[in-house]
Length: 593
Image (cartoon, rainbow, N blue to C red):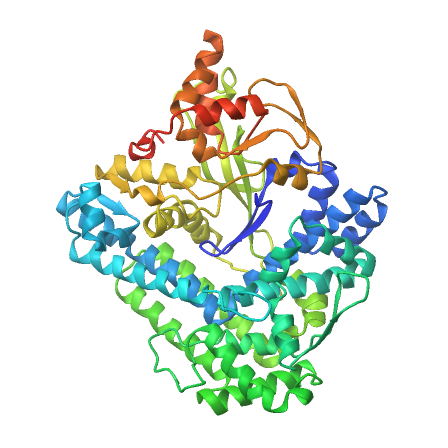
């Protein structure tokens, strides 16, 4: 699915696609719903939805608002929980070591093979013409390989009576976010709207596998009372014990601490902790399902103490202390001040969330209390993304993260020579009662420079959470400044996206568009959506497109191709010509993109 809105763990930002939003039916109303939900203007949001007479517009406004609440919950859980903090720390370890990687390459004069863990495979190095890595790069490569192995283990599907399901840390975070998203939607808009929001999804099967699995697991084990309301898609549950149990599973030991392991118990991976806790709590399942949120939280902590030797709170506090010592080591080692400042800012906010969990656990663990109190006080940084490139300067009140302006150009005569792709909204409110990061300057540096480079080292061009050009422009800049080429392994030269025009029709609510090449009107279900990375792998297609234009338009088209990283919408005929164009597998080897 093309993301309209997405939380990026590498930068702790919530970003949205301004151009996809503006292409939507009722774009003004849907855009207002998005911003009202972001800013916590709940009364304005309810009034906006009530005023809509068109069913699609009313439902989509509520859906977009609920998606904001979903992503805000990700922000909270990634910051607070041990598993979430692990995922953030994996990126910071890369940020801290970027200078070491570049310095090692400058000293050896050898190209860098990315992703870095491919350097550990002698055959891959030989195929790509890369010399053995330096000790520093080899050490980082081993760290990345270990991270990927752990993520793969966490995401490994578990067979069950309802089919294979992911039940690890990432699946738990998705389940929590989906649960509180629907609860908040129900509390704000009512039952009819929440039913419409649940149905406003093209893949109900995906919803069940990715978000609702915990209901099924806990219901089958007797730890949760949950049933579908007859004749509807709505699950009616007594949800008080749900998040307390899932938070117990997310409190793993990830700083090299000694693990508790027996035949039926493991304190490490989230899936293993969840299974261990379920087995323990099933001893009194009937009573557990009736507990209040606070009572269930106490019971989960007692169960964790009994089987792991530490309560959930003790696990979180131990992880937080290890994190503090790690940041101190970074500071003492003279690492980049901007990276350390951002990490310390993260640690401060995490402490604020942890204290809230200890003092008022219902604020974090009770869906209703979170919906009524905490969600609108949770304010991640907001990034506006324009994948096609927005001509001119960023909007007032925003900081440019990625963009381009051609030097020594009269922008009044040639406005296409200056554009932006991503911009962070300036933070104007840092009240104590808000849950937010404070050091915007450091986080803007993370988002604009460190995160794209870290993603490139971690998984080449495949790991794309923003729009694409920020990774490629970072690669080009580093190569030109250092003189060291970054060689991207063939497996990771482009993301594995497979865009479907049906996604565009669904997201925009429209049933037609104009082909961006021929300008012919295309009616649903016809048309093709071309992936921007795939377009760039077919230079013959681009050359034919440019040469078909008049001389005066050719230069403008070349600039437009350079700028535009959004999916291309074309008619079936152009799509067929695109498929016939030969793929140039070496295209992303050079610094032209």
